[in-house]
Length: 148
Length: 148
DNA sequence: CGCTAAGCAGTATTTTATATACATGTTAAA
DNA sequence: TTTAACATGTATATAAAATACTGCTTAGCG
Ligand code: SF4
Ligand code: SF4
Image (tube, each protein chain N blue to C red):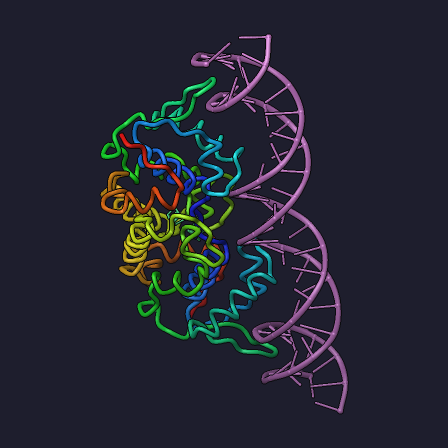
């Protein structure tokens, strides 16, 4: 059972932007910092932009900014938004041909478990990712802390 | 976020055996019934056997039997046993090189969510898969109900 | 005793999902 | 009008999972 990197990258972008605060960050910069594919990250960013998590600014000196306060960004919501395929087993996905589907009691149980999983994430926001460790995060991400 | 078919197949095998009750079932028979790979199922079966869920009998007229009562088989335990990779994100798996790992607060949160997920499954057993729908399951699996 | 039907074990291939790369376009500041 | 950024679509590569293949072992039956 894995979350996709796509979802984790979305979280990394949000953490990066939260640490950067008011300053714009570029996709290039974030990709470099984490050592991941710039192109892939660009898709994540577009998704986050379309869903209203971040604001993108084109053109020279463009970049990205959070469009909501970190306290307003729920982890559960983000995972629901970015982890496209939350169907844990075959019968919850397209093209199911498990023969016992009509009588199987597992399906609702897995859904219940998934809800419990997401409910935990719903209790946290992006703000919880920062806290006292924000300076350490900034250092790890090689963000020069702006004198604000 | 997916469970592997491997895990789901393990559940299907256990359900099949539970419905069959005292009668032996062969891997061939189960694979046919679900329309899945006999070879893959064989690996699942061996795993279940090594872990003490089922008893295998070789030779002519051999087959499989549950080695514990359905009430004794916890879904949570089974998923922990068969879903080998429960590391949801990169930093929980081998070969992690996410740079913010030392300061990231997501890791414990994902673990907490995973625990909540499994805790739900821990509340159910194989016996809960049967109940009043057992005859329907038997029909769907094309098990001739033994007059027993 | 030897045939046959079952599970056992290891390896190789195929398929699928995911991630990455590439190519080209658009925007806006300098 | 150049340049640094995001936007979009497609193609390729990688990795995980599922499936297939090959040969072996066990045990009942005649
Ligand atoms: S119906 Fe039951 S056995 Fe079939 S795929 Fe869904 S959960 Fe698995
Ligand atoms: S450390 Fe945080 S960002 Fe990095 S892989 Fe783990 S959860 Fe994701």
